Structures are given as C-alpha cells and as structure tokens.
Length: 392
Image (cartoon, rainbow, N blue to C red; front, side, top):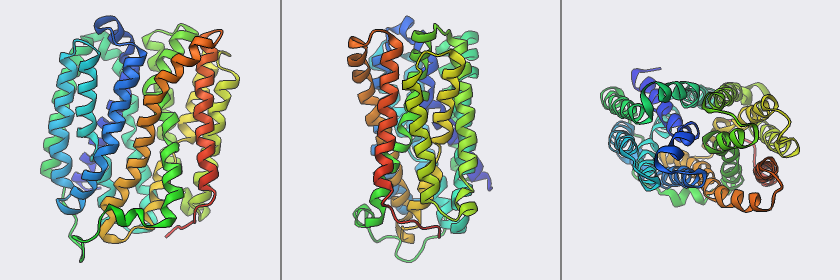
C-alpha cells in the first residue's frame, strides 16, 4: 500500500461517511430546519444520483487525466464545499444542494483506487484488494453511526459539519501530494464507454450491480433511523448503536467476500449466493418487522453482511475489460451500482408514504418497504443466473 493508496482509502472513508450520515442527523435536522424523512430521502437520492452520473466523466478523466488530479480536485471543490453548505443549511433545499456537491466530490475516490489496482496489480488478487479497500473504507459507516451521534451531542451538528469541511480539504491536499498515476498503456487514448456497453457478458453483471447495494445503502443511509424511531421509539444514541452494528457487518462482509473467488474458484456463484441471502434477510424484516429492537438490528445487520458482494462483482466485470478501457469500465459498473441506490432512494420516500397511508401501523409499512427491497434483489439474481463466470 503506497501513501497514495492509503489516502485514497481515507478519502473513501469520507465517501462512506457522507452517504450514511443523514440517518443519524435526521432527528436534529427535523427539529432545527424542518427536514423530514421524505426530504432526507430526496437529499440522499440526489447524492447517489449525482454520484452515479459523475461516473461517466470520472471514467474518462481516469483514463485521460489520471487518478491524482481527478480525485484531489473533485474532493476539494465538491466534498469540502458541500460540507460547508451543509453547515450553513437553513432548510431542506440547502441539504439538497450540499448533498449534490458532496456526491460530486466523492464520486472519483473509490474508482481511482480500483483504477490503480486494475492497472498496477495482478488480476487474480483484484477482488481481495478491492474488498480490503472497501471494507476499510466502510469505517466511514462506523463514523457516521455512534461517533457522529456523540459529536452532535457534544458540539452540535453545525460544528460537526465545519470539522468535516476541514478534514475533507486536508485529505484532498494529501491526495494531490501522494497519489501517483499509473504508466500509460499503448492505445490508452482509444475507445469509449460505448465499447464497454458492446460487451454482452457485462449486461447480467450490470443488473446484479444495479440491485446489489440498493437495500443495504437505503437502510443504512436513511431508513434505519425512522424505522427504529417509529417502531421501537429509539433515541439518537440507540439509532447510532444499531447503525454501528450494521456498519460493522458491512465491513465484515466486504473483507470476507474479497478472497472467496479464489477460495471457491468462482465469482458468479459467490455473488449469487450472497445476494440471495441478502434478499432473504430483507424478507425477514417483512415477516417480523416489530419482533424486538435487538432482532431488528440483527436482521438489518444481515442485510449489510450478505449485501457486501460489491468487490467481487467489480472483479467479475473487470475480467472482461480491455486494458485501455479499465477506467471507463470500473466507473460504468459503479454507475449501475450507485445509480440503483439513487433510484431506489428516490422511490422509497413516496413508496413509504403510500404504504403508510393504508398500513394499520408503522411496522407493517416499513416491513412492506423492506419486502420490496428483498424482491428487487431476488429479481436481479434471476437475471444474473445467466451470466458467464470468469475468474481470470
């Protein structure tokens, strides 16, 4: 791990933090600036939608400009700028603007590290290293759980956001100083994202990527807080504790998935098995939405654990990319993954409002929402069943 890769992982910690921190802030944002669950669903969805849209220009920039400038400039302008806007927020509209900017800032950091992995490291260890980076970066989920709740209790949410502004600027500077661009390959200036879309073997992988992360990110980044608050009357610290448990489960899943393709000599069946289990975990929340707070926390943690197959899916797709299109290839996969989260986040707010209007109690409405998450994953598994396995 070079210094540049280390700081790219640190930047990814920030990215994971920013995609999840609204869940813990939701009670104070509702009180201070009138941002309700549906407002935060919109803001969270904007983060993922902008993040996904940015993958096209980020992929081009990685192949043409390199990961150093791409990651450092966007993180400084978008990430730190968005955190500062959030610190000034006076209403839900400010939160939307902040999340758009933060989504732009965070969009290149994971793909920059994967680009370097794909160009400078042996192909058979890609999934293992990708899992380590993803698992370590998911510490941001931990920071956006109980530690964030403590910070808000100690210095207030605005003071916390100003601290994050400074930290984000510092990390961006360190990226500019330490990241080294890979040496160019012959033909690096040729090809486009359309050439990626012309590879038939990638389409079932795009489908599973689209659904894989959406339930875990949706629950961890938004729905865990209102669910526990409405069904179990949980306060901020209890929500932070449950978020911490789910975050730890997601880290464990990323680290565990990484080497499994080499252990079992298959990527397809590792991904398929894990996603089926993730879908079943979502359906268990539908079957028992109000059993107990402890049981609900374990069910949510299972969604995070089994839904962490992202690095193996990236490795599966990467095995079909030509060298000169690695940047655009990995970012295209990420576009489908993050785009799926954004679409589901956008839809989840109105869907929940519709479900809650006819449900006899909040637990039933949340259970039905989680059931839709589970069915989405299982539908993606049906399509992915027809994918071509490759471990090279």
